[in-house]
Image 1: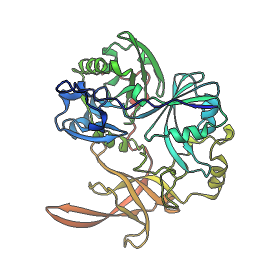
Image 2 (image 1 turned 90 degrees about the horizontal axis):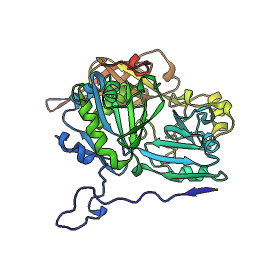
Image 3 (image 1 turned 90 degrees about the vertical axis):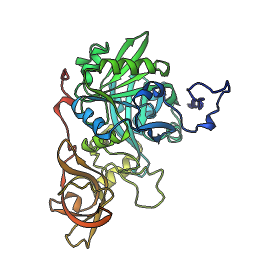
Image 4 (image 1 turned 135 degrees about the vertical axis):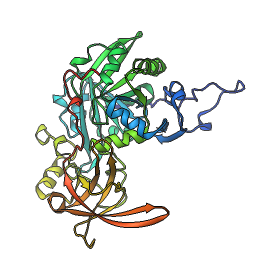
Amino acid sequence: MAHEKAPAPWSAPRRAPQDGQAQSHYLRPLLHTPFYEASLPWIQTDSFIAWAGYLTPDVYSYVEQEYFAIRNTCALFDLTPMVKYRISGPDAERYLNRMVTGNIAKLATDRVLYTLWCDDAGYVVDDGTVFRLGPQEFRVCCQERQLDWFLDCAYGFDVQIAEVTADIAALALQGPTAFAVLQAAGFSGLETLAAMGISRHSYDGHEVLISRTGFTGDLGYEVWVAPHHATTLWNTLMQAGANRGITPMGYQALEMARIEAGFILPGVDFLSCAQTLRLGRESTPWELNLDWTVVLDKGHFNGRRALLESKTSGVRRKLVGLELDGNKPAHGALVYADVDNSVQVGEITSALWSPTLKRNIAIARIDAPHCDSPASLWVDLYLHRELQWERRNVRSWIVPRPFYAPARRRAMPPPLR
């Protein structure tokens, strides 16, 4: 039987009450993460966004400074709002293997797997990472809340499912000096930690989990800790990185890095089939160019039959990497098969002029058969210059993803800078 543990209640604001009166959560609908107070001295712009019910910095100081820290030194990102679930019980492995497209049975303890989960029609519900913490204990991290879906899929399995987002604080430390900072902070043994691996540490009297994971495509780690130790962890890492160029980064800098890495984002590059209102807006793993995440020979899982059929019949469209002429990012632009813009074949979902690559790159949804064609495509751009709009027809062509993949992201041991 599936058992649901009530999610952690919304907590009262963490800042001290004023005039001796306790404040209720409805006076501040967006929560502060456990790192909020420690990060306040670094916040210069007062620019925040809402993420999964939390107030998250969009920019700390300057986007350019934070972005170049990712690529040249290291940057610290508050990952706490990432939605997290604990999956445990006698059938935990069998349950997850039945739900996701990856092979959980082959996932070793203290390893991480990126995977998808689909509905019975083979359309993607969401993507995420599965952390195997024990023989029958897992942590699933994803962008959207999925408790209802997870519970529906648990029928007939002896498994416990609980959202633990508020119970785990997390920081992403990304960039060339990330390994050196963690070593200086007292976390030893990370030189043998491979990509997508997990390392356990006893630190300041409590356990810290460090995974060699991230959303920047660079050398990076994610550090997982109990919320009441969050301030100590933030201060320790910032002090250890003071001579190694550490910089807190907001969501905008992370978005630039993830586009360069070719990573896709729910709600931006694809929609969950559980949220679409119109037919044809769903996506299969084949259409997201994530064939490598689907293990068809592992046995039955949600959507397997439909995926076998759609793999044979071919895709309607595909998410691809594009490179464009010029230096104007093609945010939301339409893509055409001809220079006259008479046949629309797709649209841009994410775009960036890459400061590191010095290339104009984009992720685009392109209709078949153009998604596999070497021929040039044309992008219809609108440029706003000195209060006037100009229209440009820009040549583009399909290129492999990731756009940026430095060898250090998987190097063993990591570079010590």
